[in-house]
Each structure stands twice: as C-alpha cells, then as structure tokens.
Image (cartoon, helix red, strand yellow):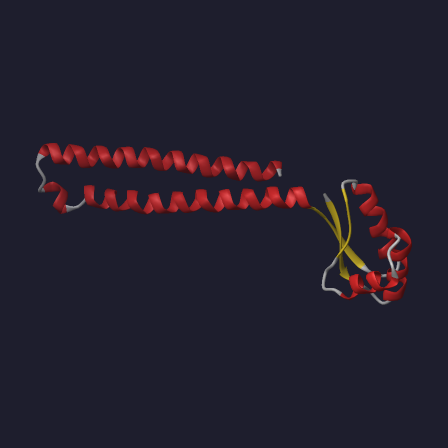
Length: 148
C-alpha cells in the first residue's frame, strides 16, 4: 500500500485543497481538515502511479510530499528488530566469553586440578566457537539490508 503524505502545505494551501477536492472527489471540509493536520495521509492506493500523479499535482502548488510504501516500512522495521536482537545476543555472549577467557588465563585457573582445567578450557573453546556463529548470523543480517 502506497501512501502520499503531506510534509508541508507550501505557500498556496487553497490550491492544494482544491486539487485534493478535484482528484479525490472529497468535500471542502474534509480537504481543509487534511491540509490542516500535521503530516496527513492525503491518498492511499495499491497503485504507486496514482499516488505519484496526485503528489506531482499537489507539489505543483508548492507543497512538499513524500510517498511511503507501507509494506516496505514494515519490512524495514522487522529487519531492524532482528538486527538489534542479533547485535545484543552477540555483545552479551561476547562479554561472557571474554570473562571465561580471563578466567582461563588467571592464576586461579592454574590452581585447578587437570580435569577441571580441561573442562574450563574446553568450555572457553566452545563458547568462542558459538560466538563466531553469532557473529556470522549478525553479518548475514547486515547483508540482508542491501536487499531491502
């Protein structure tokens, strides 16, 4: 769904109102109310060309408009949520992995029995491997941005 949004009514708001009345077949009061609102949706359509035509007509009177693809906005919002979650997961696990690394390199680690050292060292290696997987997932999500 494409939406035409009025950003600024310009210096000739009466001509913008008249244009809306003619193009959309709406009453004077409805057209005036639309123009008075802050960034109102002037027109919605599945056909982008219809929205662009009205946008050009309104802009010919000095108004400023923008066209928004609602479907794309939803996709961008979902992408942004996934990106933020992947980054948070990566950063949180990175902190835990660094703490494990510090422990493995500490004097306290040296005092542990051999089997416990093996366990802690293996734990760090698995954590580091999982951290690389999280980074790959985050990088894959960043690559998706190019497709949007």
